[in-house]
Image 1 (cartoon, rainbow, N blue to C red):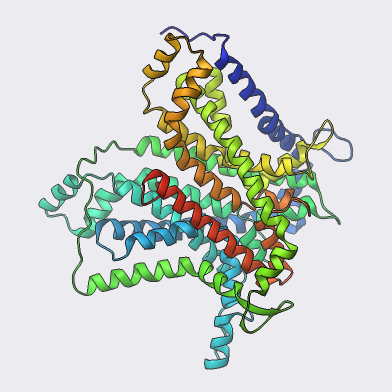
Image 2 (image 1 turned 90 degrees about the vertical axis):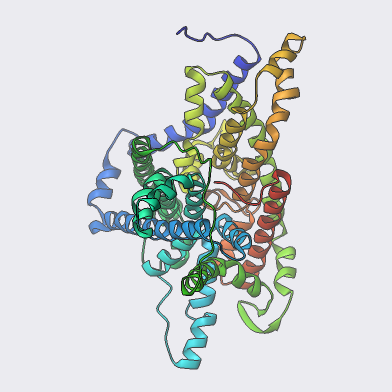
Length: 553
């Protein structure tokens, strides 16, 4: 097979420009992380002192913190996988009343920041929460504490289960029902049919979902920061070490960030290896059709599904109600009021504006970059574009807090001084969310016949004009789905921006977090309600533009 040669044309220039941009804004920052992690801050020489400190220092505190992060992540992965797969099977195999509405509620909860779930559970079951007061005053019962390991696990499970649910349900819909009918004709019992036929067929999707659940829990900063209260995990420890004005060690924080990246990368590689060995090809000519359940089992199933969705929807419900509670300073008083909304528009209007302005700019950059990069990796394949594709997807497995750290390390001095500016916030959004749109762009491009573009070139159009006039326009319907998902995750982003913001550049998620920390619960709820409304409106636009009634993850 002849090796594909480079041609000096428009796409060659785009390839070089794309490689230069990725080298500057991703490879260089990642190298800064490794340099700082192995650097002695006193002498600037190569050293393993930070890794030795992590392994042996703090009377084992650092190792215990890693063990706690792993424990929370593994338990979250296990519980969310069991819950998500169970819900996916029930809603796919059996008729559930109101399933579309339930799906929308689950999607909204998936796309909301996890720390909003922590905040809502503090309002409900915190020391002075609604439920805590009710049980204490009515029944003289003290509810278990929402703080510590149990509370973190509850919130993380409820925030990661929707992703497992959507991935598993998508896989179940590709299972051909003829296989199930064949097993039933051979006398296979219902439980055995699920365990020996259906679950093995969707194992690759379950493994992918489980890995994503683990990654979300392992890298989440907001939830353990609000609910930890002594239960330290890695993202919070790194944040404290990196930004602490007293006794902070940025180089030590960089080394711990490296450990997190290596753990996630190793698990990602293991998951890909297992999936490659366990994957199946399914025609899905006759997908599973939902059947009605009768009798007590139908009632039990509906109760189970409704209760799970109710728990998942608690953050939005509680936050919405709290946003209209009357307040006097940090204290809620009887009655309803718009005071919290009045206050945020008066004092936090900049954060609201920044969220939408930065998000729209980032989405515009992502759209342009995804169109060009996907074309390079699909239609102009060579060793350089293969490297581009791999490196551009790296942020998918890099924790958000690590993205924030590497950008600070790389761009805190001249000639490229971005720290403290709006540019670094937008850059973080683009790096974090480009993979979403890049994958949807590549997928739609595989379905577009290149003949139309080639015909335009043969009629005298140059490659650039032919691409933007024909191929880019044909790609837009497919690109838009990934782009809207990128937009929703951008406006809800906090893991990286919590490290990068200033008073002038903070966004709504950062403002919500700080209002919670300073007991401005009414203002936090009002901001969170606006954020949720923005998510819902974005989903409606997504459904209208794509003609879909659900999101396929």
